[in-house]
Image (cartoon, rainbow, N blue to C red; front, top):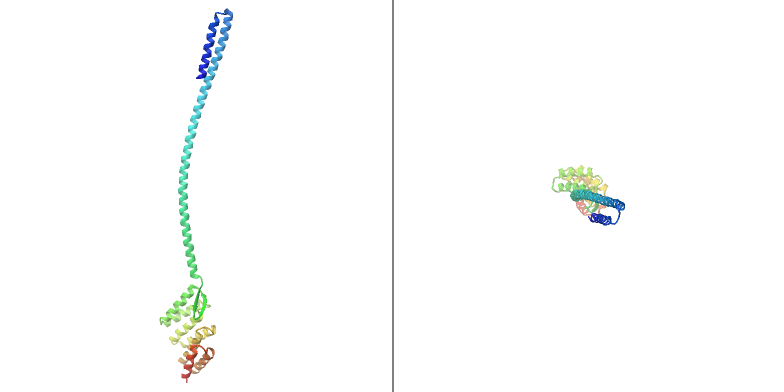
Length: 261
């Protein structure tokens, strides 16, 4: 607007100057002055028009720029909203993954604990039986304790079965000699003297220094007495006294010898 005002002012000044000069020159000079004035007016008009066009173009470009800027801002806002929505979804997914991970870790811990517990059931344990300490599998210990419990209940037939089964299942067991001793006693209780003698002798041959060995020798003598093998019984008792002189079984052997004819 200021440019338009300056251009109009210039135009009026030119017209005023031309009017004032008309009376001072002759016709030829006046004609030239008018032509010159017209040229100046045209130049001014063209300048005004150029300024107007430039102003309109600038305003149009500014309007387009504003429109483009608004469109860009709208698109940016939409993108921001979309990103917020995606971030919210990702946050939810992350929280779910965190919960799933925590649950998985708890399950893994429970599984590992369960595996440890099950493995511990198979790990050898130290046991002490009849003055001896050795390592035994938990199942081995359980089976021996079960067989001994059957014997102590007085079910000697069943005790024979479970002890025979135990010796077959664990031929190298540290319980072996003790199992032979109780198996022999169960057989003695059921009057199976010959089998009892076999198992008592197996114990002595396997571990002559076993805590139950002197009792096993005495039990062999008792079986021989029941079988009416007095001569064999006397020999067994004498061997017992020589082999285990400090044992309680040796004391009992001396008493038996005194009663044998």
